[in-house]
View 1: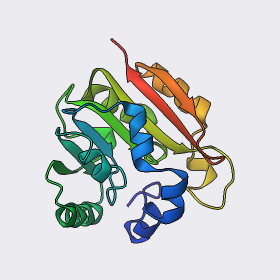
View 2: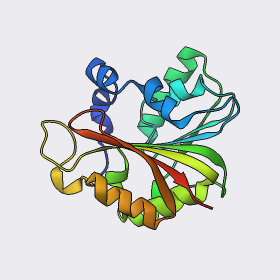
View 3: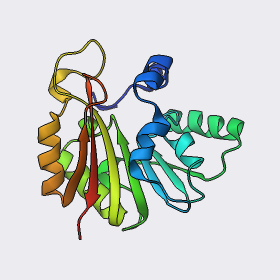
Length: 191
């Protein structure tokens, strides 16, 4: 496992009451204006923090991608328990998405972009997988010392991510700071 990648043994950190209070998944997903039949790609889907609520917001397919098979197994179990049937589980890397071009209406990139090396390769793949005009919700740790989160040298400053996304063919349509530790970029595929 890459030292940048999240350790599946720490899965409880992904979904806890404090995180849900500070970063409510349905509220954040509302920033994408998800339509009834939209298809969504959740990068680093983990235990389903975004995949499961997104699956209730569309009749389309949720592509839950994770590099760790253990995380996908947990998500499969949670999906079955909740009776969710529109999630497709995909093992793979963001830098090499095993998906067709222009497949999805939206991409969720929650706490995963800092794990991609090089970042440009991952952003190129996200752009490729999105339909024209599709949106990407990026939730990341700001590049400053905090008690939680990845090491400072792995983090991407919000202005640096904005520049990288614009260089990859996106327009930033919204930038916000839901907490003093996190930022959100809503990026739309140009052209």
